[in-house]
Amino acid sequence: MYNAILEENSEYLQQKIDDLVELVENEPEAWYKHLIEKIAQQELLIEKLMARMQDFEKFEKLNSAVIESGMLTRQSMLKEHYSIKANDTLLPDEGFHPTETSTNGKAFRWTKQKFYFDIPIDREEEKVFELHLPSAIKPELLESIRCYDNGNEIDMTKSDAGRGVVYHGVLEANSFERVTRLAFEALAAYVPKELDPNINDTRELAVTFSTLIVK
Image (cartoon, rainbow, N blue to C red; front, top):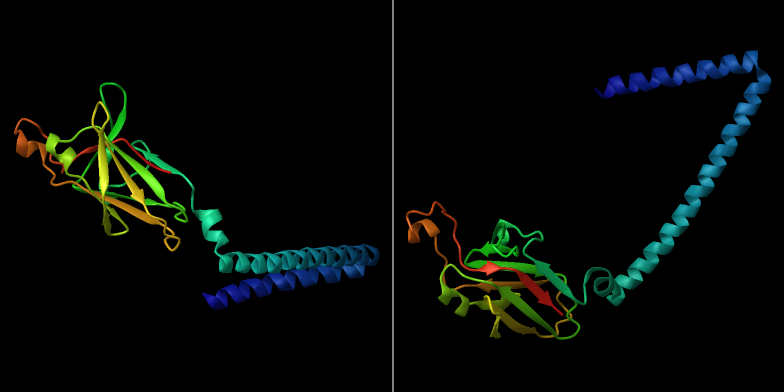
């Protein structure tokens, strides 16, 4: 295959040479004009390439300085505030089932016993969060939620939201973390079909999720 490519390129190059030779023999003025145009095009291309290389070198130096100073992480990737809702992208591997809509038109997702969020939040200063859970497959599960900040369990407080509960927590300042994994765990999860044989639902369900706010 490699030899075939070389032969094909060799034939193409020979054809170009033959065309130029014919042009020089039959139309010498056109040949010189063609040559000058090609040289001018190549010089212009070289100038553009040199300018791009200089810009790239400047960018590399600036980028290195920003990375070394830590500014890139804080300014380009991490956010001061973060929120995510049930109808945003959440995956089964993260502990969520597909989005559903309640009778009052509100979006929610059932969670498994364990669910988490990877949050690109700036931890230079202390943050607080709110986790909104409208309901649970068993009411007592709303009382049992535990929270982990990058694997470390943290305390939360709970308030009544009229329909469901809102958990409140504090994320201590931590300038070394680029992404915060905020994980939650219910006391248990249940399969609806096992609770009621008339329900054809074999999912593992714990609580319903509507919103997470970090600020």
